[in-house]
Image (cartoon, rainbow, N blue to C red; front, side, top):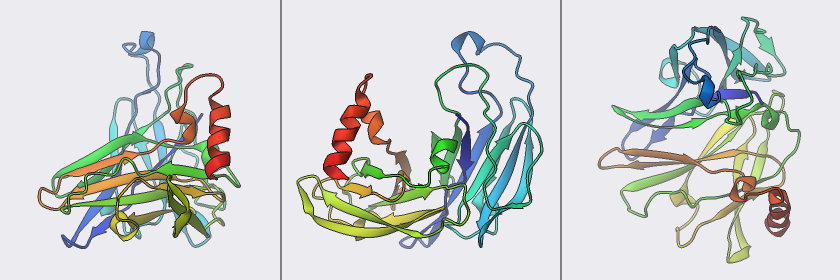
Length: 274
């Protein structure tokens, strides 16, 4: 499985009159190799990272970065003149071959060196002043190639109900086809009351940021669903006093179960709620 590495969005914090800047850190060391190969000093591959931005109806190449073995590379939105929620994505390649403009985002090369099941990842960061929070993430090529899919998640990972803590939910979507830029309706409901639902909008091939306090009163966790499109949901929180940050992302329903029959359980869950 190969993966894209998106650059997180810039988030304007109105209460502080400050921006949270997104960045991505890539390390050119295979992070999915088996234990017996961890200490082998045999990795000599240079990786090229093509930075693409969705502009109008095309993926446009902004820059190509060369990352040598065991080298860190960080790309921050702070240094790019790009709209806050526009999709920017790094495409890893073993050869410096990137089209300048394309309708379909180039396929990323697989960086695996063995059959380890761990996904290829980079560090997705959110920074304000000298405070940074991050998580190890990626956007799978297979997910970016879907024409239609479903989405189901929960906001249980939100931070405390302290009034000084602001919570955001970020819907991240990447689709290779640049023409997919339409709005998607996300339905929100309580597990105890599926009929009393709300609706918000998320956009394909973009980051869509929603402040949770404008969606709900937090008396119990919410379920978010769509039968049109998949998203990776990111829960982001900031303490207005300390400016401490927290970020988490939820997993697809298949990660809630274990065993060879787990997809039967997922099917029952989706039938009930999607």
